[in-house]
Length: 284
Image (cartoon, rainbow, N blue to C red):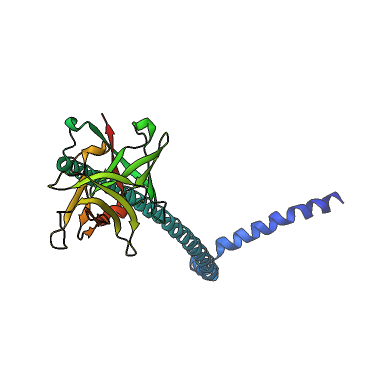
């Protein structure tokens, strides 16, 4: 029994030895042919496997490319947005600089034309308009300066076109200005070249948007027509404004009820409703 079992265990080694002897005995040319045939048999599988790998790589790269393109597109959008913001900020800064230069130029021109120097006793304070109301009887504007800037009620206010109004209600950081067109606005004035005092009062805005006022107490010897209008300017007699600030033009005079004085409508500067900055005249 033991001998039979040993023979069974040794059979595989025997077959292996016989195979090796047969392989060694086979001619080399046959071995090469067999090896080549085996490779030819395997080649389609290798090719198919390679193509599958290539295809996988292709789709993988294609997916990566799409994701990359999407990310690049997002990045480009972000960069474009940043560039737009920087460009807008640059434009805003340039516009603000241009506005300040224009404001300084207008203020210098106004001060030069009105001779707002120390001898007249006024300190000009420039302020930006924040709110405008021109409807009905509420003809006023609100500016962004108040008590902390030295303002108080009753101060004269001008712009590049001349008189625009006076302060009424003054808060800590803002003030309301009664416009020259308001019917409650009255000041002492006179015509350029004639120092006799007359009274100016606002009468609102015409249908076409033209700001107007009325001059009364005009001496009977004065005349006006569209070709040679009378220029109405401020008088220092009122104490609110310096002498000679432009108010408007009178193109026609009507006889007064008493026959001694005349009156006439005053056409104010049309830019009054478009003003963006004003100058408050603070007494020194």
